[in-house]
Amino acid sequence: MFRWFSNLKIGTRIVLGFSLLVIVAFVIGSVGIMNINNIQDSYAEDFNSVTSAMEYLERISSHFQQVRVNVLGFGFGDDGEYFLERISNHEGIVEENINNYYNLLNKLGIGEGEKEYQLVKSIEKALTDYENKKNQLVKDLQSGLITTEEYLSAFSKEGEGRQLANVTDDAIQELIDYNLSFAAQRIEKNELQSRNSIFVMIVVIGISIAFAIILSFFNCFPSHIQSY
Image 1 (cartoon, rainbow, N blue to C red):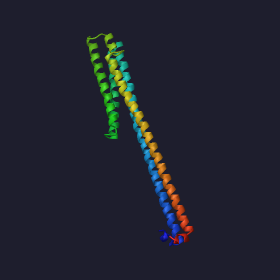
Image 2 (cartoon, rainbow, N blue to C red):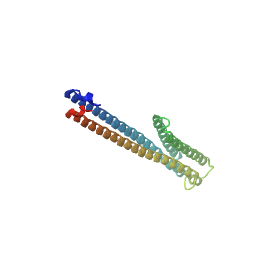
Image 3 (spheres, helix red, strand yellow):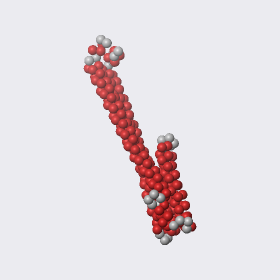
Image 4 (tube, rainbow, N blue to C red):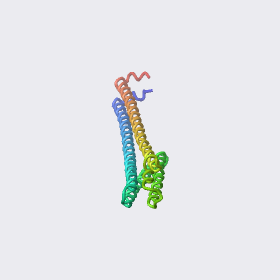
């Protein structure tokens, strides 16, 4: 089977063997570099998306809490317009970051971010329910349909406004947990890809070494091949 190789001049065999090893080394290096680049790109993409998502969530959560504080301030304070203006400003920031989150999901494409999209929708619905209840209570207080005590009671203890706020907090926390779980899964996936790449490279290197030993044997003992 190897008679054609043994019939070659020793210089030709050496050049041929060396050329094959160079090709194998090039393939190993290219595959390794491609895998490393893919893993690095995946880490960078995951880091950027999760970091942006958590940044938007932090702003949504913190400014929603500011809305709640100023809603209570409206009931306690004398300057109602001041608190209503602050409520409107914080709600605007919340809405802005909700839209930023949707833009982030649009970059991921439909399917990959579908679960996340539904969680954002849940936050948006909870915020809308809270805002509608808040607007109605503010209107009722301004028109004298309810007392200050009734207004404040709605946003404390077991009041409906407080319950809706808790639903919103839970929806935000659910999306935070989703992002943390997603990040952990992506890290695990990248680590598995890295281990697989290392395994493949080790196997290919082992095969290359065995091939080099065989070529060396043929070059050093060409007479032994003549019998095959």
